[in-house]
Image 1 (cartoon, helix red, strand yellow):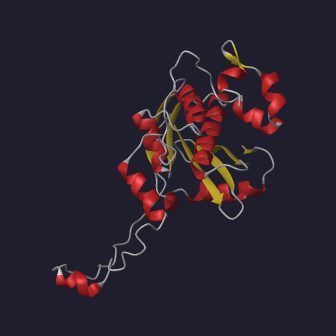
Image 2 (image 1 turned 90 degrees about the vertical axis):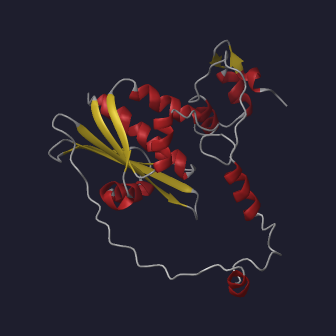
Image 3 (image 1 turned 60 degrees about the horizontal axis):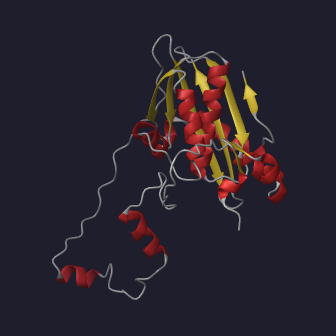
Length: 241
């Protein structure tokens, strides 16, 4: 079994060696991963988005294995009442209003989203850039093929930032309904082995512009959500302007 360093050529990937053992499409994905041969090896916990181990994620794995299936009393009303637990009927939630808000004059707003079809392991992404009057500067959608939802969200954000730079847009308010991605950007998380290169590429784009990023509920991101669903039928990047 070859070690990863076998495929290094100084500080770059050895493309010939990669092509000799892997299919072309897999090599293309590996070449997107930035190399830093001076960094030390790091352990990543695959069950969290940032690669850090948490007790919560470990418990989630245990519960998924049905290890407590024989613990049949859980949720039993008589036992709960014997322990003095009170059950109350939940009150109906109050209605919430979601809407899109314009950016400040001279700024632009980039909304991005993904759409995942679990039955075919297919994820697409999209984005829309509008100015302070709400006029659309560009929109895009793309089928990302076999990617998990988090990767699709990151790839949609990355593609949107690349287009913003291409359009010479430098003051951007980014909105997305993937709260975990917003947190990763705010907290400077390096990400797991599956998302690390994407986050590095995103931060490279963010360093070239002035930006803020915030979470928006899917109900307030309807246009981009619709574009993401359309993205499943796109073979290549589809840009609207």
